[in-house]
Length: 494
Image (cartoon, rainbow, N blue to C red):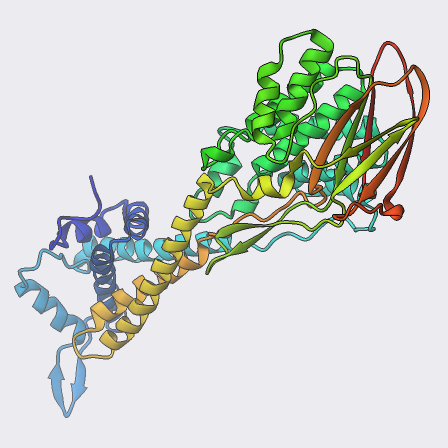
């Protein structure tokens, strides 16, 4: 049975406010009207509450039906005047303050109003809880800080720190630890995508998106699978590496603009390369998909005799920020890069490599998210309830100061305060937690080298093609018959 009566009638509301279970139903009624955004219903309900509170106040001032003396005459108390008026009033509003039954109703009505306010205050305190301080101390060392954050930081940020720290470990050559961290992160992501409780809460009006368990935007999840694939390949498991590259491409499948769906070049290229190189599969379709996404030239054909795979990353990746009146609009800021390419030199071979994938492009071409629409609706709700609250408080104050307008005035004031509380508790802010040490570009080259020890030199170059000596990397490795050599070089130090 709905708590709000038919339009134009307040009897249903009034009866509900006086019922034995009015505390629960009154809260639900007021909250439901606020969520509906029906200002007319809200005013009617608030006026009823205000009228009941006015009668209670009058009774408290003259609990014994006392008389007042003025100029020697006997006068009825305000309470008695109101009681007589209610007897002749055809309004279906019952007097809650007559006899023992009325005393019970008075208690119920008072409890109902108090319950609504207490509920709103609890909601406000819950929605506006301050962000807890870090329980660990930053040292400036990305490896130490990352491990401390994973061990002692909030659980909702665990995957974020595993992403960051796993990549830092990879850049420092700690491949086993990098694989452990990224593997655990992706295991969690696989379990979280879908009906996650924290994500469901984040979609509600009164919970911040940043309170949900972090799994990253699609471009961040693609990069996690990309690095995991490299590490599996390093470990002599190209089949698991291929599975990671395929999963990476799947993460990019739900873009708002279908033109940019599944358009990571390396995910398809490496899928096809491993299939052709290790399993003899026909991978022409994978090469064709990769070529379609590669807009700046011709991709090299798969070299089935290649035994040395070199992965490169360079430049600064994207960051996130929020815009909009309430910070509800997620925006991506592309990173900058001095490096635009590299030379890979091994023995008598020198190969010029440009970027295969632009991470900043991938981050900025996905279009809107489902959460963007949710946050936009939150912002509209926050603005509407805040505006209504202001208007109701001002209108209530004016009405309460007028003769005969006390009831409506008190009701509007109550409605305004409640609306302001709901507005304050609404959290439309976008989640701007970012995997902040990603590169701007990723690339790959496959080489065929003789068996034995080798030394590779990677020279990063700027936009003009000039070598940047301070970024040059040297990698010593060996090529054996059983496994391919898989190398990784970065212009980042962490």
